Image (tube, rainbow, N blue to C red):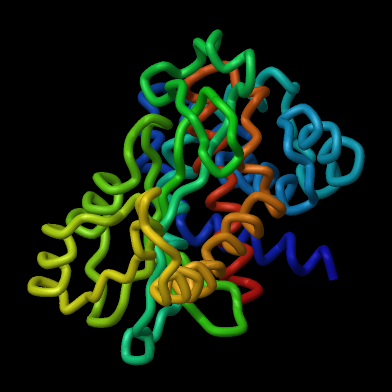
Length: 294
């Protein structure tokens, strides 16, 4: 059974060989090494699916159990260097597989937007983070009630009652970026939602954006009631509870993504290329899993 799944994964990667080659754009004569880019990508994605979340662990697992399948496996240093250089290819694959997820736009009427942290360092260590400063920064996570150094992953998902929601768009930003501008950018540049309702938390409350969504996209923005300390308890609090219950599936999506790939834990990342590999490699692993097991 696992052999069939490994073959399916390798074929899914090879189906996009032209995209991988375009992203790599090698200029040397060694443009097709014995251990191919497709094999390297398949090994990494398979390792993640087997809950091996570190490059060293993935390499040792492949060497000890899959060498018959990948006889040209290079040294660990060569494998690690290749993976880091393949980060753009993982990004391209993630985009392809995200668009390959089937969404019935005729039935979809409810969407959810939110974000989750990608943590390189937290607590007292968050103030000393230096890795990938082009993307990472220190910020406070209110839900976890802790400071962390890292970035955010923003998601818009299509709600499916009784099922895991389907991701429609994923975008990374600095940890300190407010969720609202990121959501606006997603809806302006990355995805066009059909008419329906967009559920969000209080961070997304913006009267002008609410009007624009309604006028331009026929989307009704639904957020909890923003209470003030002096406000008495009123029946409107029941509505806030309802919105929170409708938004719960996106928390399930983030939990599923983290459980499957450990994407939120990036404490072993030591470079910008390593961070991009961590982010896009794990998103690609989750998306291809969702395609094979909807």
